[in-house]
Image (cartoon, rainbow, N blue to C red; front, side, top):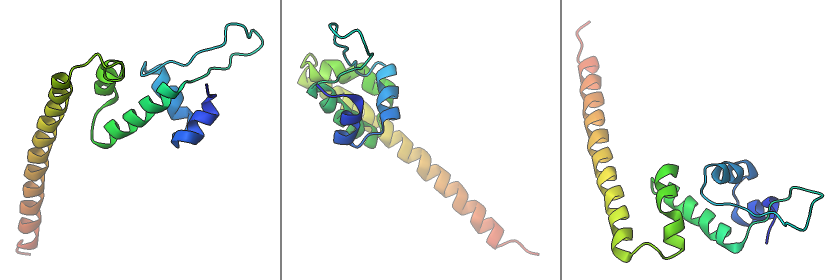
Length: 121
């Protein structure tokens, strides 16, 4: 069991971000019931794994709400292989749509630039 500063040091994730993820419901730390003198929260190895999963998922474009939908089932092995593939396929479709959108923006900007460069005046 680790305290939040140890968790931060091990994962490289700032304490404030870890607290934000916890408040967002992505995982939960535990207090020791026998200790009444402080409010220390402890985190197990599964939280380290979840934080690494969150980092990876965010890096490839998943939102926190999308991550929240699958993180517990993914780690408790309650989500089937097909369901995992479905989640990833949905994200691939979103990425493809975003690429199309960005290409259209790029085309508009290039046209605008061309028009400016060819202005008479």
